Length: 527
Image (spheres, rainbow, N blue to C red):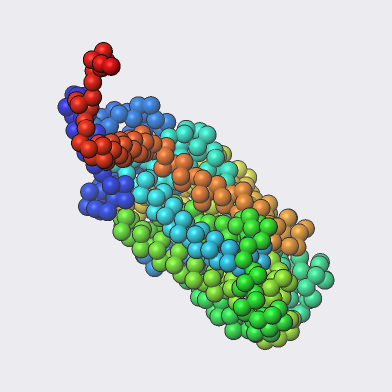
C-alpha cells in the first residue's frame, strides 16, 4: 500500500460526517454478501486484514465474535410500520405501568425531565449503534450483525461479553416483570383478591403463559411478531387513555393543597436514582435494536431513522401521559403497578387490566428473543437452527424449513439468507429442536422467580440500574469511542488548537500590534 493512498484515505475519512447524512455513499453496506461461495453461503473476510481497495489498516482490531456462516439470520422481513411496532412493543412493556412509581421515587419535575432525557438519549444511541455497524466506512464491509459483534471490534471478547451479560440482565428482568404483571392482572379480573389466593394466582399464571407466551416465543424471526406487536401497541394506547380518564387526579391534588402546591413541593427526591432505574428499564431497547433492525426490509440509514423516531416519539408520549396522570392520581400511595391502586370490581379497572394483560402476553416474546439470542451466542456461536442436525432424543423428529428462492446466492439485504437448500433444525431435547428447547428453558427460568415474588417495583429498578444503564448509555458510548476514538481525539485537539490560535490573535491585537518579532532576542536587552 502506498503512502499516497494512505494519506488520501485518511484525509477523506477525517472530512466525513459521522452522522452519515448522505445515504448514497453507504448503500453498499450489504457486503460481504456480494461474494458467495460455491455452496451459496456468504463468504466472510476476517476482521483483521489490510486491503488497498479500502485503504484501511485494521490489522490490530479484533474479529467479530460471530461467524456469518453459523449465525442464524432472519428469513422474514418487516416494513417500517412493522419494525416500528416491534420496537414500540419492546419499549412500552412492563416499564410503562411503572412510570407513575418512577415519578414518585424521583419527584415530579425531576422524573419528567429524566424521562425526556432518556428518550432523547435512547433515540441517539439506537441510530448510533446501527449506523456504526452497517454504514460506518471502517465497518460496513465486515460481518457485524449484532451488538456484541460491534462491541468486539474495538474491545475483543471483553466487549462482547459485557454486552451479552447486560442484554441478558435486561431481557431476563423484563420477562420476570411481565409474568408478575400477568399474576397481578388476570387473576384479579377473574375475581381473586390482590395479595390473596396465591395458589390460584400462580396456577392462572402458569396456564396463561404456557398457552399464549410460549408459543409466540417459539417463533424464529422477529418479523413474525409484527401483527401481535401492533395489537399490543393499540392496547397500550387504550390503557393510557383509561389511566388519564379515570385516575382521581382532581380529588388527590385537592387533598394535597392544590396543583400549585404539588408542583411547588414535588421537585426532586432523595430516591432519584431509583426512579432513573425504572425509567431506564422503560425506555431501554438497545438490547433488541439489532434484532429489530435486521428484520427491517431494505435497511438504510433513513429508513432506520424513521423507525427510531416514530417508535421513541410514540413511546415517550405514552409514558408521559400515563406517568403524569397516574402519579397525580395517587401521589405518595402510587404502587409499582399503578393499576393496583384502582379499586377491584369496576368495569373500567377490569378493562384496563385486560388491556395490560394483552400487552404483557405480546411483549414477553420480544424479550424472550433477546435472552435466547444471548444463550445461543454463548453456547452455540449463534447457530440457532443446528443446521443439518437432529434432535438428541428422537433422531426421526426434525423440522425442515425451505429458505428463499431457487436461484441461491444472496439478494438485497445481507441479513436474509436465500438458498434452495433445506435447513434441518435439530440439536434440541425430546421432541423439540434447539430453538424450541432454549425458548422453553428461558421461560422456565423466568417463571420460578415470578411464582415466588410479588412486587414489580424492585425488579424494574434493579434491572434498569444494572442492565439498562450499561446497555442504553455506557455500551453505545464505549463502542463509538472504540471505533472513532483516534479521529474523535484528533477533532478535539484540532478545535483546541484553533481556540488557542484565536486567543493568541486576540492577545496580540490587544497589545498594540506588538508581535513576536518586535520582542528582544535573549542577550539583546540593555539596561
